[in-house]
Structure formats: structure tokens, C-alpha cells
Length: 155
Image (cartoon, rainbow, N blue to C red; front, side):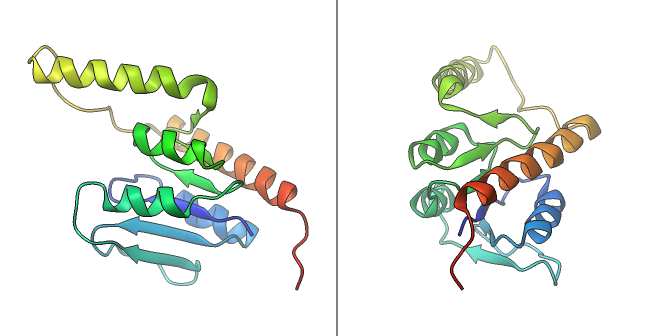
């Protein structure tokens, strides 16, 4: 069975994830370094990992399987999950794909170097209502595709 794995620490679209997971009856794991409130009744598992800069990423990358849907804004984690065969969706509703991940990693590195040099400051912009709507629609599409491809489960 497929699952939705959420990089929870800075995820601004958790509510949309809970709705889609519930709609399809798909297990969902919210992964973070500390406990985050999860509303009851959505069947979401809160996974608290040990402290460390990449502990949540490492857990998600180790658990991601072909057909799973990973929600993250972290480009290196997206790359690792794509390698595992998972589908990966950014918080703004844009999917990470094999075709674009190399360019995204290179752009991330360049921006990091520019920040270190003091040329650029600040992080990514917040998500808009349009991004939120695109995210919900694309997540629904990816989960539906994964459920369809997984076929009926023996019970």
C-alpha cells in the first residue's frame, strides 16, 4: 500500500495533506524533530525523530518506496526520494521530477553560495492561496495515480 510521507517541520500545507490522505484512505506519516499537533480522526501518524539537522530527512528517505508520495520543500530530500521511486511534491504544488531535480540542486547550491557571500539574503517566499490550491489539486492527482497503479490490495 502506498503512503504519504510529510517533511513536517516547515510544511505549510499539512491540512491539505490530511484531507487527501483521508479521502483515499492512504496512511500518512508526519515526520519532524518535535511533536506537531495532528488533528484527531485523520489517521495521521506523528513520527518524532531524534534531534539532528537531517534526522527527519533520513527517516523519510529510508522509508520512501515506489508509489509513495513525499511532501517536502527540501530539494536534496526530494532527490533522494525520487531515487527511491517515490513521487515528490513541493509545498507550492509543483512536483519534483527526474528531469528537473539536477537543475534544482544546482540552483540551490548557487543560492547558498550567494547567501554566504552576502549577495542574497532571505529565504523562499511564503505560499499564496493559488499555490495552496495548486498543491491540493496536484496532491490529489498524485495520490490517485499511485492508488490506481498499486491496484487492489489483498485483504
